Image 1: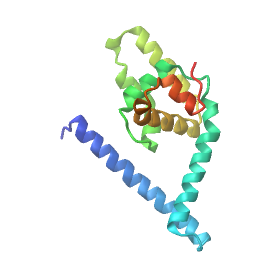
Image 2 (image 1 turned 90 degrees about the vertical axis):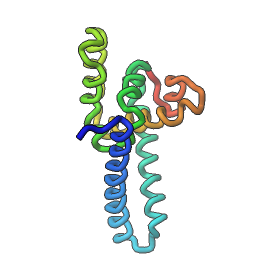
Image 3 (image 1 turned 30 degrees about the vertical axis):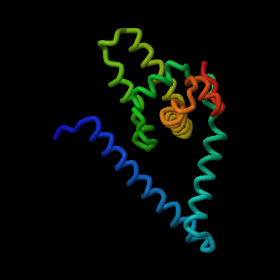
Image 4 (image 1 turned 135 degrees about the vertical axis):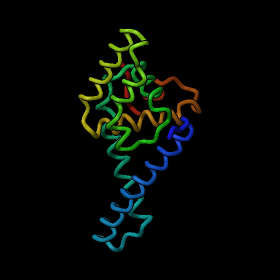
Length: 159
């Protein structure tokens, strides 16, 4: 069965939401079971707060590792996809599909260099990178700022 891009986006979002709901349920069960005085809302607030602290703490590790062209390539291949385990693990594959051989040897060299940069990151750093790319996709156009300037608001300095 062949799907259109719009249908694939809808399916991808459904999968991410199901995956996220499952992880959220595991988190809440693990935390409300050990601290029964936490409500569901309090558990979710604590979980979101912890994620935000991790993101803020790790963003500076990405400074000086990527160019604006790298981020544009990631924006192109992400197409606004939601952050998920699959999107983090499949970055290199998406880049290889985006940069096919008909784009020339310079594009292939750039893709390989970007793939090496991404491979050198820890899982958490890749998650932070994809979160920043996702935010840039959804927020930067509304702030009317360049990619470079938007990443600076996240305290990530591009090369």
